[in-house]
Image (cartoon, rainbow, N blue to C red; front, top):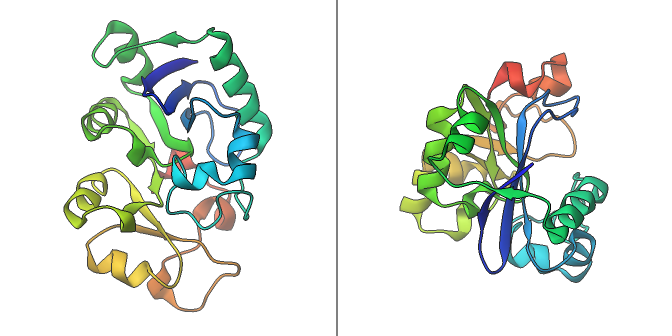
Length: 199
């Protein structure tokens, strides 16, 4: 596990050899509060103003990410046991060159600097990622991040995202008949892991 980006408020940590059955063994990037434990961040609504900005499921309103791995990763970070690596270093190259990368196991990967995201994707064999804050940023910036990330949407704003030229992932409670919202995720429909799909 490595710290790949850190600010006064945020930390982004990359973990390898995931046993996530939906994604497969992708390198996973976790973006979380640097100062608040994830459980506290979610309980107080802090996550909705920082790493999960723009997501209506933040702050324990339906987020599918379990707090258990988040707490484990955060505690190890607080203990100082993660190595910090810098973009372009040999360690960075070893981590991302030819890798399959899930850009946001938790948090919006749009919290990473655009140049960093571009570098990771240029090195990776395959990557996946969603941003739920696309509608809160200037259109030009949303389009720039949209080169690497899908816009995570609700049925109420998916058409707007598509009109901006963004690839979309729509969160629904049941599979709709309206195909403008897209196709059902192939992990759910066909058991295809993200590492093999890449959509």
